[in-house]
Image 1 (spheres, helix red, strand yellow):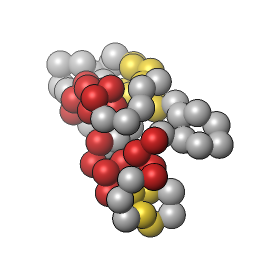
Image 2 (cartoon, helix red, strand yellow):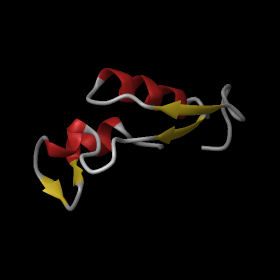
Image 3 (cartoon, helix red, strand yellow):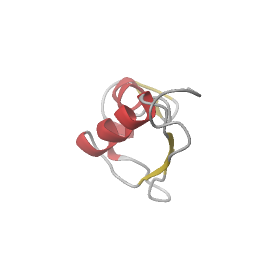
Image 4 (cartoon, one colour):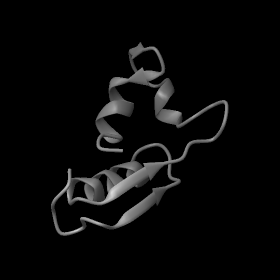
Length: 67
């Protein structure tokens, strides 16, 4: 997304599971450039919940969109 009230703002998302990534996703929805950083090796905990395609579960993709 290139427009929105937060266009030009860069956010570093170091959060995991649901509430932090969802909040960062809302910032991305408003135009912020959100960069998600995950722990090496294990990644975000949500990568292990639900059905997966590779390293991506539906929960992970839904919560971490626009990053």
